[in-house]
Length: 166
Image 1 (cartoon, rainbow, N blue to C red):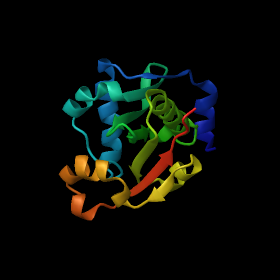
Image 2: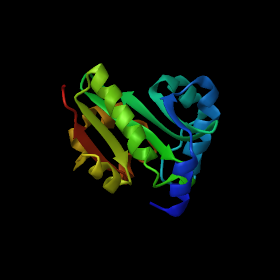
Image 3: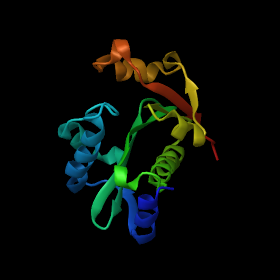
Image 4: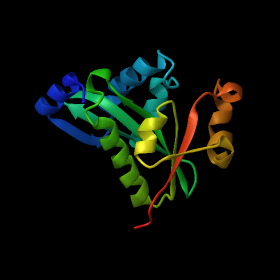
């Protein structure tokens, strides 16, 4: 673990919780940090407001330092979406913690498959996700991807995890 992450982790008072409307600006800023670098697709604030109930956030000392959303496509398929951890918190286990929370929620509501589009394949592989071809996710491709500016030239990698039913 990087030394900065180690010192943050030892001092932090992290809270993982559902997002609220007051978090929208912070979520937007975290996502913008990565979308400006081409690592996430941009999301306008209006989209975050509309989907606020899908988000969970990690708060540390009254500051939002990470976010992630669970988007539902069908009775079976959901997506880990907009996963972002501020760089100074990288390596502190926050990404894993927040994805585990999304997986718990997915299991609770009865989803059987959880997917993500990512550039961080190693991270998702460590969490039990397998790389798949986009054609095994028609719900995502024809429900959301078709409206993306990268649709014809998508460079993200699709990963999928089968969830347990217990």
